[in-house]
Image (cartoon, rainbow, N blue to C red; front, side, top):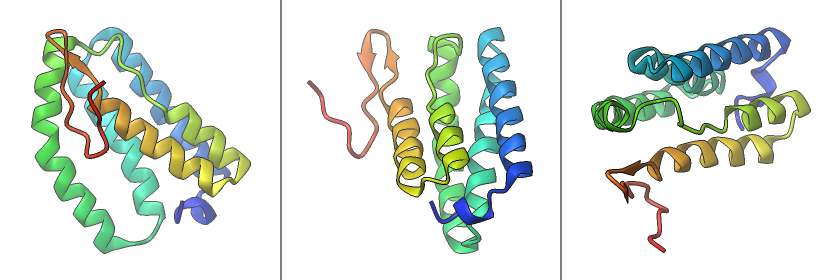
Length: 130
């Protein structure tokens, strides 16, 4: 949400283009392209917030988490992945910081709920088995 004041019409267009590329990569099953576009989407937002230290911390976590997700995508594919980027884009367009925060949290949580071999991978800090 700290990025919101810095996300002008040009950045919004950029995010939409990245999200379209991510959706195309997902539909094609292009795992590496999907991962790259997902990274680009998130870090366009994080860098716009201007907190270099926080962005570096998130990037460090992303680098550690990336190989696991690459393995998961390799097993489940990318065609049926669900992201919440459209919610983030809508929140940016509406200049709604609470909705942007919720959209990014939902997007990250969705990745933690991916089934692998019929089981939820359950790696999210807020994940609860039901």
